[in-house]
Image (cartoon, rainbow, N blue to C red; front, side):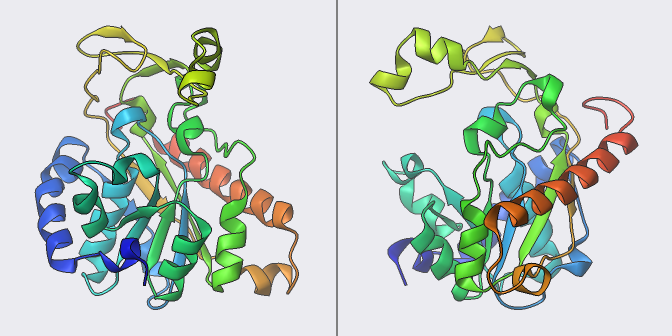
Length: 263
């Protein structure tokens, strides 16, 4: 195994989840629904929408629900940016299942029987404006479909609501990043602008604290790609189907939600 995949430590992960549980279950009153239909063995690629800006809670919410339901025999990996693997915290993240986001790591983790979380929309999705909080948008990224196909595992769509209510997201700030030439200097295509507590208006800094918004996650039925789309599936067709079932599920969660933040 690669250094990333082999670093997962079930005992350490259980202790970390124990520390996170009050935040996940208390502060965010999180619920994870639909795990009864989750594959009970083998690899699975969990494809989710990404919410919450700098303090995205999708990974801890899913991991807490998954480990509470299935125990710690089967690892949950999360495909992540290289940045978190630099500095003194790198080993911490590897031990709880974070792996570099590339096809080699994803396929290795899936073939080993692991559950791999991927958020195809990445920073484009996690900083979507509040007016688009209940919209599935991967910015045209379809690589996750190929990863599932290459590893021979199902895609398990998952949608969450509430995370994008942690503050008011005004804009991804692509125009601001271009104006400040951050796209040239730091290869940063966005500079998100939002309003939150306690500092009010923020373009990433000053860092506002997330509101105690209720997060509800719905795990959907697995999609067997070859069974549904044939031995040589059209990647764009599979992606369109995944996004369609996710959008329908997110619309249902939105219809059930009474008030922002409160849930």
